[in-house]
Length: 436
Image (cartoon, rainbow, N blue to C red; front, side, top):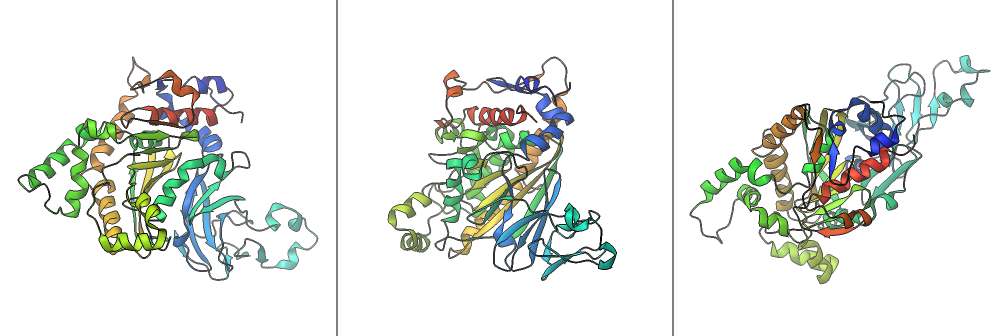
């Protein structure tokens, strides 16, 4: 199938209550995603705390393009393509570091200021009378013009085409506010490194699973049964070790997950757990709660601390947990290959226990060797293989479908409704079927 010149064929892959398997299997569609979806939407690049000092950089790939986030001398954070303007060599090959007051290409020693402006080149006289100054190679580094820093979370849009930051994310940015404001000082910092997991599946499988509340009872049955067996016989009000506090709610049952509720927004974003979640009953910390009231006022402190959504999806690349302070970043590598990053945050002015919860949760649930993640990974990779089977080319998203949802952009619903997944695919179709 030639999808590039067939927007009608792409749109037909996403029906009201199901999607075609090509969304997961087609390398052609993946290539188009790099151009039409990932380039035209806002992708999470990193956190400002990863580049605290002037000259600090953080390098990564976004939609197949090498980029680097750089702290400027004036304190601003800017994002550039990680490419020398001369021959194209990457300026930095380390993931992070400090470049000093300028970047120096390791190939021919062309140098650039932190703001990307050209600084010096060897054998400068050899370029006199040439067109170097007038062409792109003479202009210095290419900056990603569409960069937004929201409460130290850095997002970029690669293409000149696409919605603005506020237009694209809308109300879902409140999930970032909820996480940052858990710091009495209103500041977060990345801590504890990152857990990375490369999974042999399409990125959309992982993203939709973030909103899937029906699978824990079957997929993670062995983990929750083991935890139940260890905790059996304890008093209901007995203090739980952190691992028990975090793993036992996975077996809470369909009714619990249904009643937690969910909300969808335009452009594929969502919040799962608008009423409560598996994170709602962590042990109380009176001194911390008083510090929050002092910092934010009693009403706002209650609003922050009582609201612990399960997952907030910033389509298409980020999932945020307010409590514990943790995020997952989805980095698609190929139609059948996805990199998942799990990051923990330290909340300034908050007790170390909050950071320990984030670290422990990421290790317990998202580490490649965890008792939870290996269940999911096995099934994601099984689904990727199973979809090649003949006979049925469609993936069902029928649960709780209501035709009226097609006319609304923001909807609050029950927690097991597959609307949260349908909402992602409808956003996918809008961007993918748009003219190139």
